[in-house]
Amino acid sequence: MNRRTLLGALAGAAVTVPALSACSSGITSLDSTGTTSGGGGSSKSGVTIGTANFTENQVLGYLYAAVLEAAGVKVTVRPNLGTREILIPALKGGDIDLLPEYQGALLHYLDPKATATEEGEMQNALAIALPAGLQILPYGMAEDSDAFVVTQETAKKYGLASLADLKKQNGKLVIGAAPEVKKRQVGVVGLKDVYGVEFKEFKSLDSSGPLVKGALKKGDVDVANLFTTDTDIQANDWVVLTDPKNLIPGQHVVPLIADRKADSTVRKALAELGNVLTTAQLTELNRQVDKDKKDPEDVANTYAKQHGLAR
Amino acid sequence: MYELFKNLGSWLTSGAQWSGSDGIAHRLAEHLQYSLLATLIAMAIGLPLGLLIGHTGKGAFLAINLASFGRALPTVGLVVLVFLASGLSMTPVYVSLVALAVPAIVTNTYAGMTAVDPDVKDAARGQGMRGHQVLFQVELPLALPLIMTGLRLALIQVVATATIAAYVSFGGLGRYVFDGLAQRDLVQVLGGAVLVAAVAVVLDLALSGLQRFLFRHRTA
Image 1: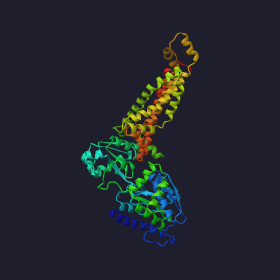
Image 2: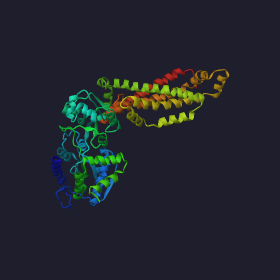
Image 3: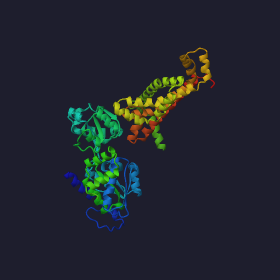
Image 4: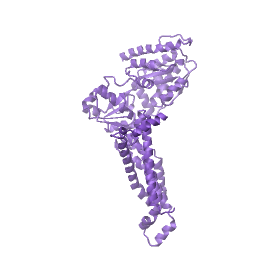
């Protein structure tokens, strides 16, 4: 946790650099800039939050809304807008102002050749890769990254705890994942390059969905590619293999915001949320929406109140 | 756009693309295997059922409604459902392809049977033909054109839908569509789609040719 906090602070400092240079182009801000503030925008006219088309992103969007409202900002949430291909242009065009994002995935979208996998590095790379007018704020603790998962039985049978252990079983194990994982660095290619792992077979299934989880449960595949905030990992007591060589890029939740709205009120409110919300808590919120069929807005508001982030 | 079609052309014609286990030739063979086997199973189920209800006139309401229900089933949903019950095998694929093909076969067979002129059936019985003789020597030959149409319809639907085998990790031409989408390789997606369409058209033409040959002496 220490390393993470330190890097977060460093990364936060790094982000303010391009944001500050953006101010110099004539925007006069009355905002008395404190240590957390670097942007030249104002949230006085209200902030519109957009979210992508999956549960967790909507929960995050409503969490952002809850903490911003508590800070006195007028908020509109436009949930379920689609994928990055729609959201990023909407953000640039001014239809939305703020978007819950993920470090690694956003970086890969902006710069497919990016090689950074470590949180601080990625934060810097993101600040460089972002188009003018947009910036990222310091990332939160919660993380939704790729995970390679095995069942308890498989872990015991083959003595698996980390991705490096897979090499001992080269040619024996079957991996199940979405089709793209076969050719991706965070997938079969990287596992071979970084850990020297070779699978017996690649089964092309879905992305952390019913197929790949069903196949893992039934033993049709030995290793499955899931996401860390998938509630079924805990529910089934599956083992997430550790990644000692940092193959998998960090996917910390990071707010992506238009410069025009990034004032100190917004920065502070979102940073407080980022420091409180953990991966386990986010997983639990996802579970409440997906399994208990609760409304994402209610789930987010309840969480914010319980943790003193909203009244 | 021009660039895309040029790339598609070279994808479809390159020798390397046609060979190997991920080559077009192998995927095409897999696709045909899935489609033909599923259609054959569907025929084994749908033909007797359609003939039976057409001949007896009993259970038609139930069968036709069940068939419509079968048509309304989303194939991908069915694949996932059967997958969760049976695990990773070809079963989910065949179950859903058969479920897709049976309704077309049953309804067309039934329609063909009901279209047979009642006077002709009466005349056959009047000549002393037994039930099975009426069925196989009078009704079936007269209903055959519509039955064939049902089979063509079923096969085309199955060929177009057999791409879902790739959804649950198997082969066939759907492999190109799913992998291409996942890897953002538009040429591969388009190549797969064009091949599926081509297979469907060729099979349909072949069957319609066969149909015309078989019924060449008929005027209607």
